[in-house]
Length: 363
Image (cartoon, rainbow, N blue to C red; front, side):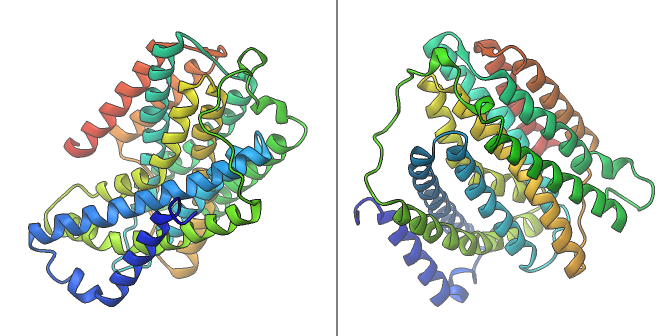
């Protein structure tokens, strides 16, 4: 067990070093030979720790079965995201676009890059993959209006200047997001659980790893032991990122993109692995469930926190990003409309993701 959990030891050691030598670690960020190693060190420790969260969430998912298994995973990662964004928002100067950039980056990285890679690799290995059409449609039917209300509507309202919302509009958007997500959870874990299970013809798909023999309570305890240090380290990671953005003139979206990469990469590993083993429904549950949880939980929580603390919050996307969001949602409707996927669909999703990366840095 000590060997399996050595990542947690590295994470706790990193937290201790940052607490003791904070001034020395962040004192010379103007030197690129100091800045780059610090950013790389924190980034990879956070990523390794987040993968530890996924490992224990997957162990719990094996005990609980679908759809509860992937629900534990998505809620764990979304919890990290919400707490990390809150910590970063409270650190230093207010970044009003951080929530918007992170939400948009999560949508594009997951629905573009991760879905694309999963469909590509799965199709190259198995020609076609099947999933439960009703489950995918249930996800998209909630994701589409929530994405539109959260990331497009603020650009179209006239009550306030810029991509922002009035107090009443915040209540409407936040209440809609939270309400629809709660209703979705009741459907997913209640009378329509079968919508989120692998189709019968794929039930014999091989598993990727053996079930853990550790007690369930131990996995729950270790899950929280991994989550808490991640939030602290993300707040520290924001300091060199802020320096790069403010001092070196890097694109302001880099903070949101890096945050999104940190919280979505562990899920991506699990989703791609499931698709490679003919369990595309697990990938759908992980990827679409993560996007839904991100919008359904992050938006109302961030709206509430920003209102209570008097922080500025910009949610509306710029025109180019708005077009990318509409395209990826439209393509997802087509991809998940037949119950089967093939290599072309994976290529389309992945190329949209490449376009997102290029436009993020070139405008």
